[in-house]
Image (tube, rainbow, N blue to C red; front, side, top):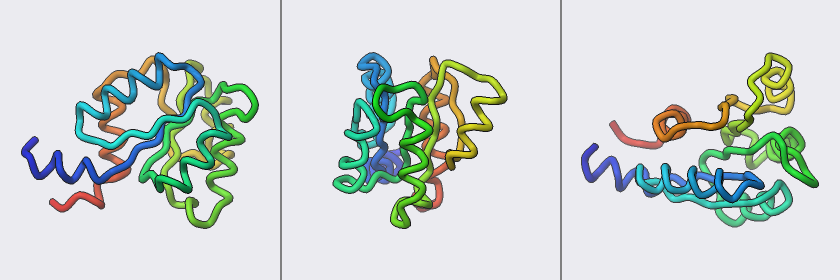
Length: 135
């Protein structure tokens, strides 16, 4: 990756919503190392204000969170016309067909199983933000 790729990535804001500090910090470290700007939120309520403040290009949301779970958070994001096209990636330690289907019903764009690795996380961001980076 050359310096222009890193500079382009720095313009991409990624929001990580997870009640686990360990998961938030791991995702933040992986994405910052890859050159992305990272915003962290510990639950859906915290995330909703940060979405309007920071306008992230892609959002990762944990399924299992207190107060407002990932499915509810995803549905609220997708109901807002300003963020309908913002990719929302569900994060879960469960990888069942039912969980994936429920994520789709809530409007999620992809389902990523935890624990994720750096390559999987970064590749997901690249897949959903590629059009923003000049070739």
